[in-house]
Image (cartoon, rainbow, N blue to C red; front, top):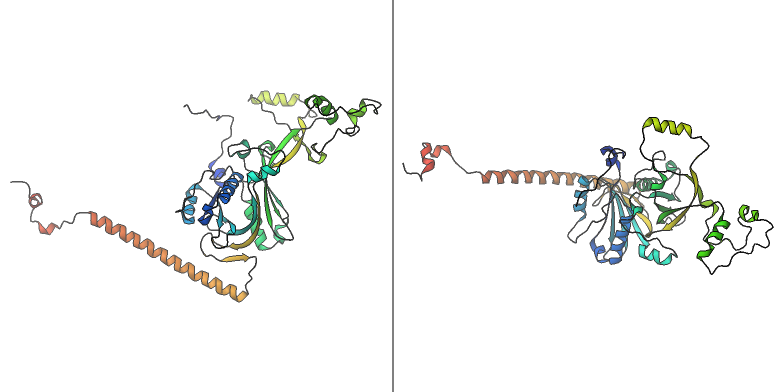
Length: 394
């Protein structure tokens, strides 16, 4: 099959520097969580949330360890790791959110969750999307609700958590980003009383708003024959129907768009590429008053999944027993913190020494193998070169 042609003249190419700045993620589940089919489906749903810059078709095996994924994350440019795990003893489900390559790591306890299929069942008009849908071609719009807007005034652990959430997706540039490319919303809400964090995932639906909803109802009344036409006998003039949208009883319903949801969006129409002189002349001839601004109603449809979780602790490193920066239930005195810091420094020194010894042993092993492969010939054992060819008859 022939390769599809890609436009190059009119499409702006993304530079390598901009590609390197885009956050990329991996969503994993290891250990006993591989046996939990519900948790496996939650991982798949969460991968859809993190699209398009995530490993959507990643497959884990029982033999895989976290170190294997960390080693592979470097060459692939992965910046964030989301690790779902289930404890074999208690059955509690946790989510670890780590920043590559050296941390920190946020550990959350998942209190409850709902899959995408569960969210569809409770909605009256669900939106059917798949991993290849157009909604997942661009990252979602991140909305933080319940967090303090003054980052410098909050505690250190909350400031770190806000920074981690904000760096999950590429930043949106208001000057260059088109509004039509934003198809989804990821809302992370924090309860100020219980300190619980709730994650919701929505799809953005926009619809053109007509000037008068009463006229629209009359025009579309033939589609639903069960509904009766409104009684216009009390209206003295037809202008009441056009000017006052609430003058006719029974013309509104719960499904109507609220006035707060109506926004004005500049209409961006695709046009052919023309010469610069022609474009300048055409722009000068159009008066400034004529704008292509249209009113659109914005509606959010939940896609799922839903996750309710609580922050347990924050670790300095990414893997292993690293220094704990914050714990929700355990508090340490200054003396205990100093002792723990000394223990961590000693562990780091021992680990560094073991790494050096391991590298040295590997180098010695490689040298010995290369020496053993070479033939051992001592020139002093032979008086002349003919002794090397004893098979040949002279």
